[in-house]
Length: 350
Image (tube, rainbow, N blue to C red; front, side):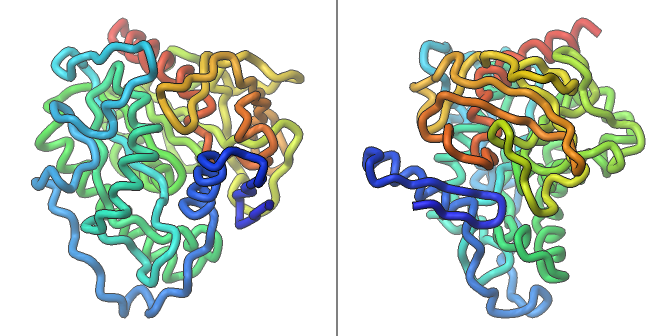
C-alpha cells in the first residue's frame, strides 16, 4: 500500500514484519494525514490553558532528571549534565495529526507520550552528549495547517509560537544563567525556532552566545534574517544549519521547498556535488540501540525552486521513500551527534 498525503509518501508492504508495518502506519498517522475538519473558527474556539513553565510537567525534557531525551546510542556512556557547558533548546515537530481543535492541549497524556517516545527520544537525544536538553511542551497546531493554508491555520501557528516564545523567555531568565546555547527544531518545531532566531538572535547580542541553530525539515532561507547565515562548514558558529531530505533524483512538488537552503550533514557544507557523499557515521530509526553505520550518503542539489538534500540510504524502511521528511534527523543521527561536539569545541576555542 502507498499512502500519499501532502509531502509524505508512506509505503507499507504486507511482506514487512508486523513491527515495521506498525511503525510505518504510526508515522503516517503522526505526520502525513490531514486532520478532520475543525469544529469552529480559530477565534471562536475555546482554547486550552497556556502551559505554566514554572511547572516541570510542562517540559518534555529538562536537565538533572530522567526523561526521554536521556536515551543513548548503543555503546555510548552517559555524560552527567553537571559536566555540560552548553544548553540546547529543542522544539519538537507536529504529532497532533487528527482532532477537532486547531491547537493541542499540553494536558493530553496520550499525545505527550507520543512526543516523548518519538521526537524527543529520537531527535532531542542527539544533543545529550554535549548539551543540557530543554524541550518545552506547547500547544502545537494541527498538522493540516501546513497542507491547507488558511487564516485560521496562520492564527493557530502563531498561537503555538507564543507558547514556544514564552518557554524560551522562561528558559533564558530561569535556566540559562548566561551559558552558550543551541536552538534546534524539526518541522513545525522549525517553523517556530526560525521565528525565535528572527526575534531574539538575528540582530541581538544573544547571537554571540548561540553556538548554532539546527533548524531542519522546513524551509529556512537568508531572506528571513538580516545577519544570520547558513554555517559554511563543520566548525562555524553563530550561524544556522538546515536541510530538507528527498531520495536521490526526486524533485518535489508543492510549496514547502521553494527558496529552501540545505547543507550536507555528512560534509557539513552547502556546496553541490555531482555524486552522493559519504558514507555517514550512522543512521537510527526505531531504536537508538540499533545504529546503521555507513548506511546513508547524501549530496546537496540546486533545483529551480530551492536547494535540497538528496539521499541514498540502505536503511530498509526508507530506501523506497521519495520524501524523507520523517527521517531528517534519524538518517544522520550519529553525524549530528559528532558535529555538535565539534561545533561546541570550536565555539570554546573562539
